[in-house]
View (spheres, helix red, strand yellow):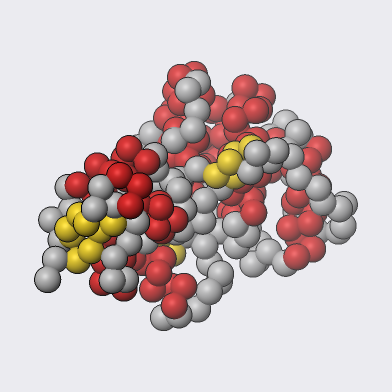
Length: 238
């Protein structure tokens, strides 16, 4: 089953943003005509599920939905949300949202809420999270397959887009697992004569701390340290 009637158009997304803004989401849209009819009393839960399905065609919805859950999860009926979620073609999408939220929030009650909704759902077979974002076989496709964030990979997806959780500070979340980070280090050492810790952090979109970066570099068997302090650089073992 799918709430999605067709690949969402720009007009559909504009209306979705408007609908989401009516329930408190931090987005702006327009009340243009569309083919969906959300019936009360399930309207809020169905709207969120429809947004989850459209999310795979629009990366901007990732941040919108995560911020909505962080601020409004208590307004949602978990039983209705879970019942509707389990009937969707790809309920794992909400699992991805959960992983990003867990990466950010300290709210245990929100974690319990999301655990209940997604409990028992299995990961998908490996596939791109976003549909139609770029061509299969393109450079971006290759990069995504090699450098996916662990929040996507936990549910079988491949994706690199990091959601923003604070529209004021533009703080983005999402991280790479150790295996992916080690591969990034090796790639850096092969593409550059030597590199600094700042360059490693840039390759990771500054998704880890400087201390974690130093730990990664220290425990990578394929590189050597040159110099110390601020001038320290790493290079590939010959």
